[in-house]
Length: 116
Image (tube, rainbow, N blue to C red; front, side, top):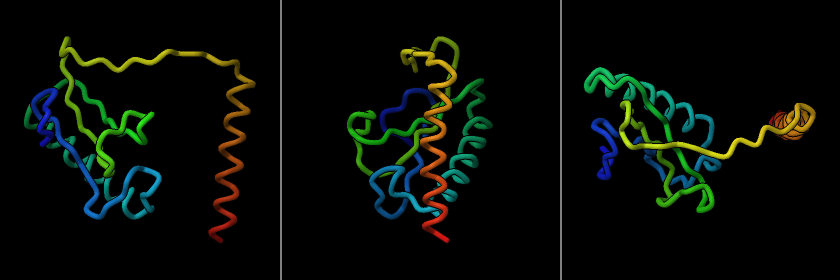
């Protein structure tokens, strides 16, 4: 349970071994974390009956990380609960988005080639 409960059922899922953030997770840890998140989220919803939920995970100081050990918040949500997640939508043109996608795809391709 998160000591700073936002809403009833607010749970943290953390790695057993020290990993600072998502960039340090290997595929096995990442899979185990998300399987655990899905199980705990379902159990928490069954226990508390909330109509919505956010998963929150921060990386790096600029990303809002304050505890430098990988963890994910399972955050139950109710109407008018005072919680807000908002960011400034910038709506870049499609060709800019396609360029962003190409940059990421190139890194994925390079990582795949390096691991084979």
